[in-house]
Image 1 (tube, rainbow, N blue to C red):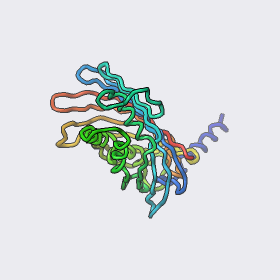
Image 2: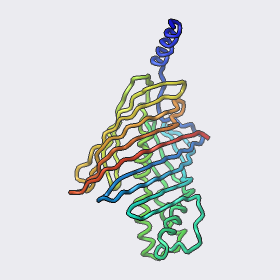
Image 3: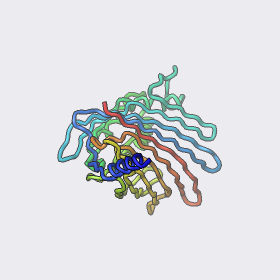
Image 4: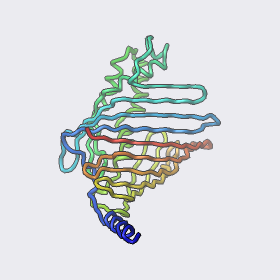
Length: 290
């Protein structure tokens, strides 16, 4: 028992004194794949609403300039299921469309599948610094036009589609979504017990300020485990306000900054005038090197 206790003490001391450089450092010339899953559960005016969404990204590091990585990325697959007030939408870019015209007016559900199917394989470019901050996104300007060109639309339908698409797929939304998992790095040596803070902004239909604290809870080999504690504060002057918390665990490969896996639990309240509703959600991110 004494020998076992001594061994445990030595292992604990070894873990607590180990340090790792923690920064976003995906290797030039290599490829990485990410799978992002989001499950949202909310109730609006007594009507339950559920949404499950999965995004698959393929990323290749094409260059580096003073620590800023240039990444060429593409949408490999998109899945979404929505249930609200008897309305069900099931989109999967890997599933073939059923027979039909897929016309926006005659068959709107098929048209939605067709639009999202056109997203598959679309490429864009990002620049990311050592803290995981996305400093630039390019390629979204032509993406909506390319997708609209692939469909048979008159001028009015095309304009409507472009507006709706840009509201869902745009550089700022993508940047803010990925930064929730990437803008986590202190860009320095860390050990168990170390903490640091990050502040990020979310826009879109429910904007808020995310104030996050990340704490190193474990270091095992090259894997660094972080515990996240985030408070969401509403932005002033916005029609829709969002408050709440996010808690989670993130495992990072310190050699590259690859987020191997991340699990987050979200508890939020959205308010607009006299109306408010609670939102519960979970998100998961998995990353692998090719």
